[in-house]
Length: 290
Ligand SMILES: Cc1cc2nc3c(=O)[nH]c(=O)nc-3n(C[C@H](O)[C@H](O)[C@H](O)COP(=O)(O)OP(=O)(O)OC[C@H]3O[C@@H](n4cnc5c(N)ncnc54)[C@H](O)[C@@H]3O)c2cc1C
Image (cartoon, rainbow, N blue to C red; front, side):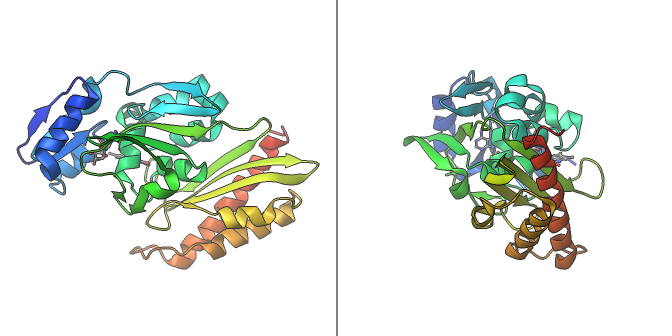
């Protein structure tokens, strides 16, 4: 399949890229890794008349620590997230999750900013951003603004980004000392998008939860952070019985969107099983048992 005809631009600066987006409005789209947009153009689900390639703009990729956060440039590839030692150290959940995205070739090209802007409800990186309360930096003709991950995704494939705005970086809070993390996903074949996924971080002291974050992806039209469920278990014993209760509460709190061939009840069972598995592994990590 071939895309419809389009003009291609390779700006050298954000200002130039934004000027092109302003000039062409809804007829223009930025392209980063092309791993979602190019297939959509080939199938003609997307037919932008003007393609603005971000890959010629210096300074949009890379990873650095900044004021207790890991700041990741929007053009940073999934492969870098999965393999950079700084990511593994400062935000190990992000590294673990990135390694599970698609296949090697896709991880070599796909970018963090592209994944967030694309907002596939089953995608891993929007789930991590939501679970960890990441902050998303964007820039447009009106200047720069920061968007909380909680406010970024509106619905499946829909975000608060204006058509002439570009994601420039994402700040993830660094893991606390002694924090455990885990990510579990279920898909039919290796490399497929998740039917359900759970991301978890925990801190444990004296056998009790000090802090807890729970995220669920793939079941609703946007990633979910179950902050109320998590808050209800802070102070509880970090043992198998409580893990089972948390997992049941997580499953009871989500409402799967209908999907042909995947019954909601099945998805809820998956969410419960994946949450329990992720929690158990995160606790073992927090206790240095793995
Ligand atoms: C076979 C296959 C399997 C895959 N499996 C998975 C998977 O298991 N899990 C998963 O999460 N993903 C998966 N993906 C998607 C992959 O992760 C994509 O790389 C990602 O979703 C989009 O990133 P990109 O950089 O390729 O974006 P592009 O395809 O270049 O762009 C996607 C959208 O984001 C917009 N955009 C891109 N960058 C920016 C920016 N900086 N600011 C504003 N808008 C921007 C574009 O205009 C476009 O609308 C898969 C893709 C393929 C082809």
